[in-house]
Each structure stands twice: as C-alpha cells, then as structure tokens.
Length: 369
Image (cartoon, rainbow, N blue to C red; front, side, top):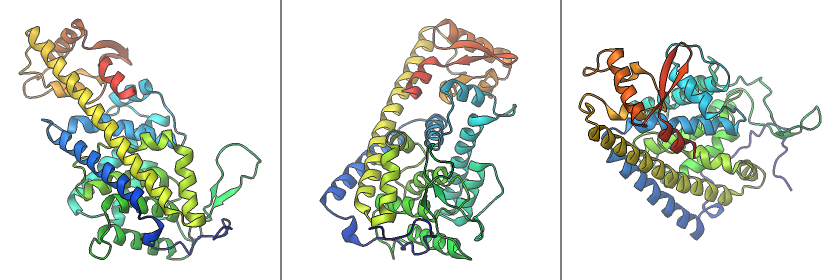
C-alpha cells in the first residue's frame, strides 16, 4: 500500500539522510568502492593533460545533449555542432539553443562552486534560470504544480506525483537539503552517497515550475567538484541515465512510494561508475587523436609552434577566428593552416552560412559513439 496520496502535495517528504538500514549493506559498499575508484582514475587522468579545459567543452556538450534528451529535447549532433560554431554571432533557436544553455548553466554553476566552496541556493536558482532562459525562481506556493504520466493516453493525464506546496514549504525543504550537502560534521556520509540521496530529494522537492531534471543533474556534477572528487565538470553522467531512463524514474518513484532507498543508490553508484569509465575512454581517445594530429603536423613541417593544437579539439567545427592568438594574428593565416590540415586529411571543409568552416571528423566520431 502506498505511504502517500499522489494527488496531495507531499509536504511530509522526510528530511535527509534516510535511516541507515534502508540503504547501507555489502552490495552498496561494493558499488561505492568501484565508483570511487573509477572516479579517482578519471580525475587523475584529466590532471595529466596539459590543458584540461579543452575537454570540458566537448564532454560538457555531450552531457548537455544527453540530459536534454532525457527530457525529450532532441537534436542531431550535426545540427548541434553547427549551432555551436555560430553561437557567438547568430541567434540560436530550438533544441540546440536549450542544449547550449544547459552547458552555459553548467559553467555558471562551476564558477560559483569554485568561488563559494559550498552549494548555495542562489547558485541553484542561477543554474535553473540559465537552463530555462527565465528570470523565474522558486515556484510560488500557490502554483499547483503536479507531475503527470509521460506519453500519450487520455486527454487528462494521470498524476504520478504532487510535490510539496505551501507558504515557505519549498524554501524550508531546500534549506534543509543544502545543509545536508554542505555540513559534513553533522552529516558525515560519503559524498557519492550524499549525491545520490540529494538528487532524489531535489527532484522530490521540485523547487521550480519546470527544468528540475536538468538542473538536478547539473547539481550532481557540481557536488562532486565541491567535494574535490573531480576538478572540472567532465563526467558524462546523463549518458547512463538516458540509456536507463525507465529505471531512473521507476527507482525515483519507489523511494517516494515505499522508501526503497537501496535500489536507487545502487543505480546512481552504477551510473557514476560506468560514466566515469566511459568518460575516461573518451579522454584517452581524444588525447591519442591529438598526438596523431601533432605527428602529422610535424611530419609535414607545419608551424606547430604557432598553432595551438588543442584549439582543434575544443569543438568539432572550427572557424578560422577560433585559431587567432598572439602567434596567429590574421584570419588569412588561420585559413592557410586549416587548409593545410584539410590537405592532410585531418579536417574537412564545409560551407555554413556565408563562410567556410572546418570539421574535425575524427573528433566527431569519438564524441558521437
């Protein structure tokens, strides 16, 4: 029998953490050890790179695309990267715009975490606003927000969950959640377990009118950075969730209905474990491709000292102005170098809008796997 009425605001949502017996056992500890080890390997690999930030744009964009796809916001890789190549000058619209704003929200949150060393309500709201392109904030207490069953059916969709509601209720629950995340003295729990618990709690509080899923997944990555399990937002967590979306929602709902915490925590630890391994593989393959590109340039006596090779890997589409620096000061010089790489088969050229841009095909293949 359900412990709550899904049609009534869930104001009795329990505070964190759940009772230990609801989640802590040998299976959870084994999953925790594996996820922690793989996350440490990912962090260690990233720290050996000469410029970690070159992978943030690529991996973060994949995270943005997958997280948006979970919410049924779809775009092709080609459309997304073409839009990305013009984001500084042209107006973006449709799914590509939402995905790129997700990435900007990730960066905004990363900068806030780096500055504050803790999770603040203002950061959460800023992330949501960037994700949804809105100035809205915590949903007003009178807003009758409910979660409806996904998919097509009767004209009146079935209610599957009604989040907490009432004057000051959401604000109080968010304050408790942030205290749980930030206070390791009062709540001395492994950060990966905290992340899993907090993600459920955030989605159950449902503090915003919309965009809670995407905002919540960004917060997962940022919390790992806050706890120094990662240095940069390079964990491709949404890939696992997208592939196991039905299980994701089923296990979230099981906590609300029956307080089944263990299956949810096992799911999230497996998500961290698999995506850490997946992201490590992506970085290794991109790193190998960079070295091959460098070798081709040396073999063909290209001015490698003038060209910033990592610039060729910040995104699949490269505009000549992306290469401008103290060493390459003119668009024509940048075009010459890009054309040389095209001749060597490293890049291909396409017309997009009124100009030509160059396409790193091998990088695109790695990112699209």
